[in-house]
Length: 90
Image 1: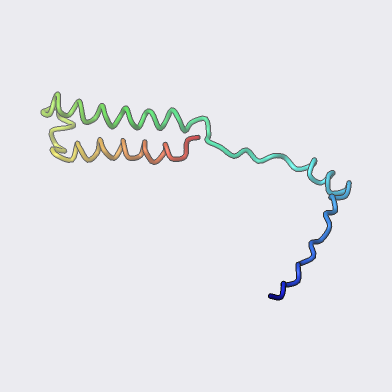
Image 2 (image 1 turned 120 degrees about the vertical axis):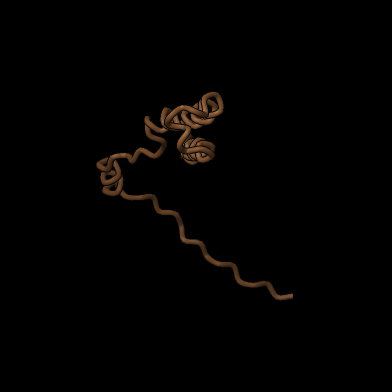
């Protein structure tokens, strides 16, 4: 059975000194979560949970009474925002 010809690889040439100077002049880009992300994420979880719990404890309060069943949806919306923020946290 005939063998196929092998490809020739180019030999490695290290970058020149001028390339190294260009790299040192550039500032590093910070990749990662911001400092505000974790506190806002935890706050969203707590606000959502507190909204639902307070509505169950005092459903006749003037703010919660007018919203009726939407209070659960509002509480879960806060919790959902917390989960969305948690996907960006490292």
